[in-house]
Amino acid sequence: MEKFPKLQTACSTTVSDGMVVRTDTEKVRKAVTGVLELMLIHHPIDCPICDQAGECGLQNYYMKFGLHKSRYSLEDKVHKKKVQDIGGQIVLDAERCILCSRCVRFLTEVTGTQELHFFHRGDHSEISIFPGKPLANDYTGNLADICPVGALTSKDFRFKCRVWFLKMFDSICTGCSNGCNVDVHYKGDVLYRLKPRWNDAVNQAWMCDFGRLTYKGMNEARLLTPFVREEGARKVAAWGSLLPDVAFRLKAAAQKGGPDRVAVIASPQSSNEELYLLRRLATELLGTKSFAFSHRVAGDGFADDFLIQADKNPNSLGARLLGIPDGAAFDALVSKIAGGGIDALLVFGNVVGTLSEEEAAALLAKVPFVVQVGTNEGPVSKAATAVLPSASVAERAGTFTNHAGRVQRFRSGFPARGKAKDPIEILVTLGNRLGAGWTFAGEASVFKAIAETEAPFAGMSYDSIGMFGQEIAK
Image 1 (tube, helix red, strand yellow):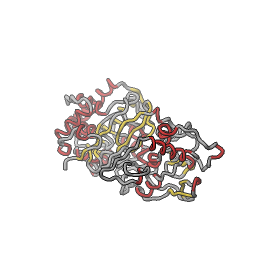
Image 2 (cartoon, helix red, strand yellow):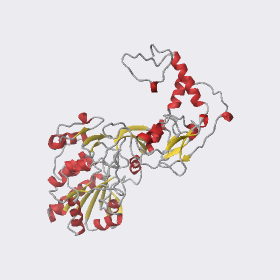
Image 3 (cartoon, one colour):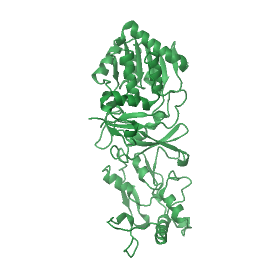
Image 4 (cartoon, rainbow, N blue to C red):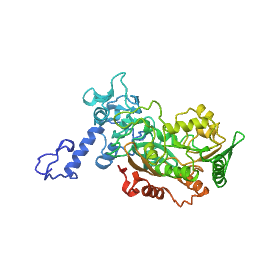
């Protein structure tokens, strides 16, 4: 810095008007190299097996400023505890720690739980937990994100894949109605991890541990092929014949017993675009009033005062804003189904409310014709007459409306697995088979129609939503 006789540390120097700072001089580079050497004196040579390799700050700085030979032999290095399960989603390797204190500050300033502390002195200093006091908060995965080296690594991602083999796209967490912004890391058509993406209005730079693991449902027990059930056995079907047949049977049931004997159950896991088309299909094309969405609350509906919401769906508010009832309307619909008052049922999603597999099976057995549009095996697919496999949230695009009324975009990372189709394509095909004459070509055209016809979304566009979302009209 000009007018300062010595180098100043960036982390403790206050910015002032007129300050002149140079960060790329020979003197600075020499100082950085010296600091790096001190950090690396006792650092283990773990790069070939370290999960942080490829996105390690220390590794990157060494390649840029260091490239020096160590003056310490392996025998002279101070050794510390490795592979310590300290609770939550985290494994601690104290040897790799550079004592930056980011993790300690996170647990003090963000979660307020203060589980990690500094112990010992000098080159024997290390971070750790007190005996019998493991990490006990719902945000432990963030420690692996903020650790600049491989000292704190994720149990879930440990030894799964080298980061340079992974590709990435941005999306929205579906674990609850907060709508945390995330980066999805994948290889081929397999998801490996979710990491929080910065959005100061929603999740800052954090996400909860539950949401971090929701990607697993996009990999496991997927519905990949359309099928029908004949005499209790599954039979693979072709899209070209199954969709017209489903549309015909839904229309026939409405004509025979009356529109209200055809029911449609929507899902708050669906996008605004999908819910808009489904509402029009149910109310305009089938003419039914037996229409509601299943409000799923996982576990005990836990919520906190930071990110976690009790509603474990990403788009419950979006469904309500689009005029789809829940609560008492959904309970009444379930009672109507249980009483044998429904002849045909179209279910979006993999579950029916909070019903167990046995309860769902008993309920759906009351309906002669059950169609599912879903992503995963579950209670509905085991009881459905016909199953239309749909793309997961990683394989399609659209918008969710979070609990605070912020509309946010999620994007597709790769094509749908197997023979699954985008739900919008499924709905448009069914709608046109029922006489809609829709010309929608993807999620953008559907959202344009929403913005033109639905008051809460008036004036919105994908451009105005952008990367950080846009609040609905109040």
